Amino acid sequence: MSLEVEGVLHKKFETESKTESFQAREFVIQTEGQYPQYVKFQLVQDRCGAVDPFNEGEKIKVFFDLRGREWNGKYFTNLNAWKLEKVAVNPPPAAPVGDGGLPTEEPPFTNFSDGNDMMAGDLDDLPF
Image 1 (spheres, rainbow, N blue to C red):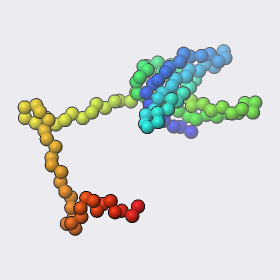
Image 2 (cartoon, rainbow, N blue to C red):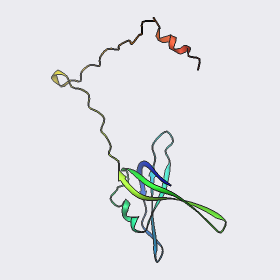
Image 3 (cartoon, helix red, strand yellow):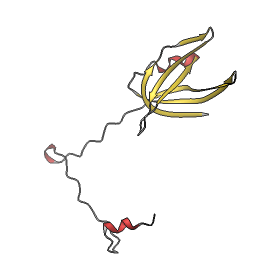
Image 4 (cartoon, rainbow, N blue to C red):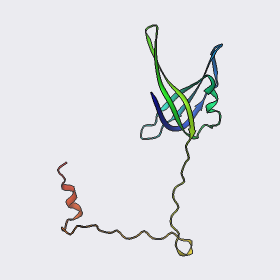
């Protein structure tokens, strides 16, 4: 099951050797939105260095697999990251500049009436 999510890199942890032949590294991103979440991901084996090029505070996209397993009657879930990308942050669009370097005025509001003499308050009468 392959998924992806964007967020700000909040924390990077060091690589840990779990056994002689298995290593893992964790990192946390903070999602955006009304209720931001701190989500921990795991990189394993040769992918442990995938988070190295990114700095805490950078916006990244994480591609990951959802993994689950049972051990001694307990259940564990991992978010196994396999690819990271930097997200380009687009600057806000510049205001159009008129003569003399000052922003141009917004065009006046246009009433798109279909000729049935509806008033703005009439739109509040919707049945749903």
